[in-house]
Image (cartoon, rainbow, N blue to C red; front, top):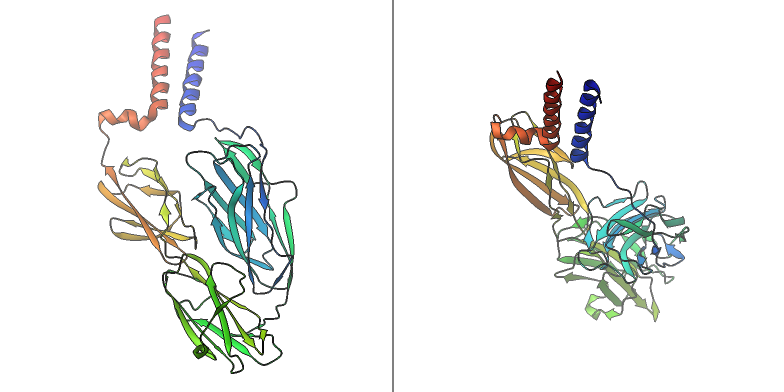
Length: 400
C-alpha cells in the first residue's frame, strides 16, 4: 500500500473506531415469541355515566418474561379512561406512561427485577367511564409487546378487540340529583365536601360524603370500596332517612366509589356510584443519567430524568438551579455552564393530585481544563484517532 493510500486507510480506521466507541451499535429484537397479551371480559352493555374496569392479561406460553409494554386504543368519543393500575406480574412502572383521552390511547409499561415471569396473570387494569350513547371499541395495538432478556417474546393476537354498547341510563343524572327509578319523584343529591369534583384527583385520604333524598325514601343502603359496580347492602340507621353524612378515614389511593340506594315500599332504587379519586403517594424518581457532571464554562451537559406515579399519573416537572425557579422542563434537559463553581440542581416531579418528589444533585463548572483533562475532553475515540495519525505521519517520514 502506497503512502497516501496508507494515510487515508489509517484515518478511516481511526474514525470508524472512534464512532464505534462513541455511539455503539443498535440491535433489533431477535424474535417474536409465543407469549400473548389478552383483553379480559367486560359487560356487553354499559350505561352512560357508569364506570367499568377492564383487566389486561398475560399468557406466558412457556416464555420467560421480565418487561411488558401495553399499547391500547379506545373510542375517545364515547369512552374516557380515568385510571390504569399495574398488576403484580410487572410491578414497577416504566417511564413514559400516558393516558390520552384526546387520541384514545393508553401507553403503559412495567418490569420485574429478579426471577422472570412464567405464569399467567394480570398485566394491569384499566378503568373507563362511559361518556355518551353509542358504540365503544377497545383494542390492543400491535406495538403492545412482551420482552425477556432484551428479546421480544410475544404480543397481542391478530384480533384483540372488544365492542360494547353504551345506552342511556335509567338512573338519570339531573344536575346534582339522581332519579331513583321507582316511578315516584324520589331524587338523590350526592356530594362530597372533601372531594367535590368526581373527575379530579385529591391528595386527601379523609373522604366526606353528603347526600339527601326526598321524603319518600326511608331506607338507605351504602358501600364504600374500589369496585366500580357494587350492590350496597350495608343498612344505614333510620336517623339518616332524608339525608345524612358519612366520613371515611385513611382512604386508600386509587379510584374509590360511594354506592348508595334506597328502598321504597319493598322496591330497591337505582344505585348511585359516586367516584372519589384519591392519591396520597408522591411520584418516585428513577436513577437519572448525566452526560457529564463536570464541564467548562460555556459547555453544555444533558440530564435524562424520569419519575413514575402509580395512581393519578405525572403532571409535569419543574426545575430549579441554585435556589432559582426555572419553570417547567422536560427530559432530556440541557444545562449550560455559565458560571464557574459548584451548582445545585433540583428537579421536582408533580402528579395530578399535587403530590411532589424532588431530585437534588450537584455539578461542577470549571473555568478551564487542566493538561491532564484534555484526554477526557477529547474522548477515547479522539485519542485513538490522533494517535493513529501520528503513527502514520512517522511512517510517512521514514519512507522519505
